[in-house]
Length: 533
Image (cartoon, rainbow, N blue to C red):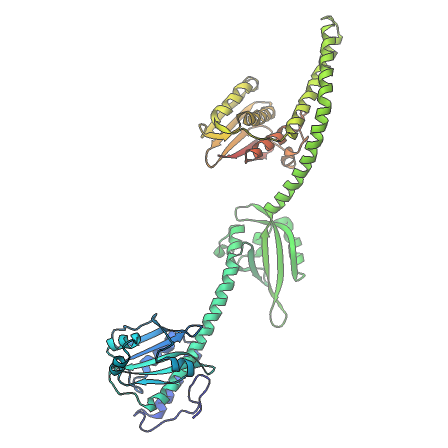
């Protein structure tokens, strides 16, 4: 008699005294099991078929299957079925070493116990025997499950009648257990494939980068969680849509042209989010082809580098400001003392002139220009000097109101209305003197922007990061100039040093905060100051 790698008979033997069931019925059963497995039946479905169809061939009231762990040290029951209450069921495990099952696992032998009660009396330490005896079983036949000739588990057949298992049952059940081994191997392969698939899926889904696959028609086929976080679209919103959904108009043609080349590596372009934000992204794309080499789509890995680009620009700006600051400090020190001497000398000359002397007007103009130079020098020193805030709790509303009281006369003369909204009673931990400089500069700019009158509104939102919006209804700022206003010496005023806003930014950042501007030409300008508590 020969057996295949699963332990099943290659030529099925039929003994006339083995069973009263005709040979063709046995073959029909084996064919049914084979068909079930070939159609992709799970391990559980194959087990259920065997349990339901085997009664005509072998006496049993209970069937169970147990598999070894990777180290082949323990057996774990994965399936158990009985015509009564199951005590020794799925999830039970036991040690192989020293048990009567060890020869089955180590050498592939068959174990027959036709009197379980007698066996238990001789081996009372057998916990598994005690449990199936409690279920009412009196005899058992156990066969090894073989894969590639190596035992990977066992299959138990148990009966409520003693002395029922004979050698012919062993021969027939080798075939059944061989088919069960095929189902076990397939289940392991499927489980392994599922684990690898889930592992790769987890990598795809948990990636911080957007990983998107598009088909030959440029429609999105896969959408991972990184894509959702970056672009804001849920998978059901993105899948099936054209990839152009993500592209900013100005980069669409360039991106498409480069993608036609078959691959794309770290290409920087603009993408847009669901809420309309513009992102700077870095794309690496690869063409996907079928087995005949025809393009079927492409995979795209997209990384949001908006913050990185901002940091790079900020680094360049900071380095430039550091150089400017050093130069400004040197120049300011060199100029300040001579300016003081010039101012003093001119004032002495002016005092010596008669009141009706026409030259006094010229001297006055000179003094005015000297004062402008002195203001510029002081601004240069303030800009170059490191800022270390002396923090204390202050009433934010009081800080804002005190500055406005100082500027109210000139603003009221222009017909400017002032209001404070929101959490004006918020308490903020900041340097009172430095924060006062911030309000003076921003309020003064707003007043100058509303030469024909208007409304200056301050909105306060308290929280872990307190935000103050200072909004005027002036002429606004040209979009091209919005990012430039933070540069030293950039100004749109006829009289101004261009250092006011850079100093304000430096003060806010010294408090761990940030400041930004939003403007609509001819309508309004808002400055936002955000400082942590």
